[in-house]
Image 1 (tube, one colour):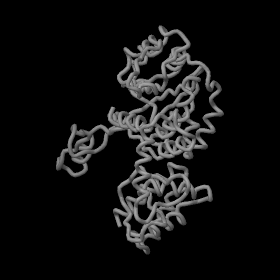
Image 2 (cartoon, rainbow, N blue to C red; image 1 turned 90 degrees about the vertical axis):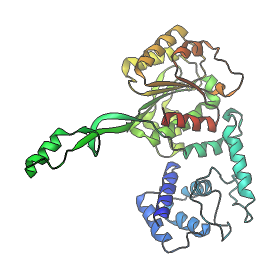
Image 3 (cartoon, rainbow, N blue to C red; image 1 turned 90 degrees about the horizontal axis):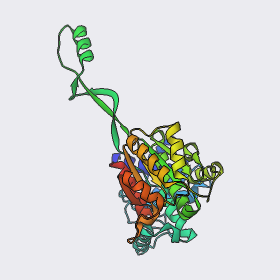
Image 4 (cartoon, rainbow, N blue to C red; image 1 turned 30 degrees about the vertical axis):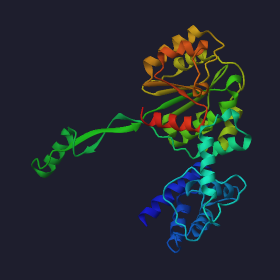
Length: 358
């Protein structure tokens, strides 16, 4: 039952990330229902979750997609003898709403199709394939590296906690035990700049979907700005749990879609108003700078003195023959810690891993 509770709680978190109203009370109702059902029957698990976790009719297609992805494509029409797998797979239904065949032949085909989509350039996908990639991005749990904070917590090891030791000695009349403390840890903050200029138009929406996954994973440790002809903060808009709603709010907030890029001026504005001290700065752009490259280089130097790490995400880096020849890339390159690709789902997964282990 403990393993079942952990599995279904994680599944409910996946549903919430996809916009389904699977709150704590609904999750508890699901566990109560499963206590009276055969949890090795995927059909019973499917219907129990659908009846308890979905709040509105709009949740039903999202629930189907998440169930298929989380449990490896098994649906109510799956074989009665199959068992629910605890391992999470990146497999989803083919978009027509049909479940996998009882003989198990559909699941490997779907899994291989998803694996191909993971490595394809999002600018060359069809609309249906791009939506599939965006659904998988919505389920991405972006990790975050930890840093030591100034706060302390009790510990069996660490530095001597003199105050607690003395207080306990005064209360008991003698020193019975030495108390220790250690620093707590917090997720390292990330500031993300997303280029929404015309040259980045094929990748802008997918980058914003990735930004949404970052914000929903660590709301208090993530800031997001759009950059083009002006600097626009969009963190508040991305805090909506539903990705579609968040992207609609972002589209209303950004006034300079598909314009030029003056990244040097916008970094200067950001560094004048705010600071990136101790943060991981992620710049998602192709480096086509319309402004002065010298100004961009100077601001990148300022940013490098503040940020813990600077990661530049360039969609064209995913091609084997790519060379950073644009003026913006040449100006920024000396100050980068990492230059990574940003053209596919696999590239975003690798970027998430990089942020988790920075």
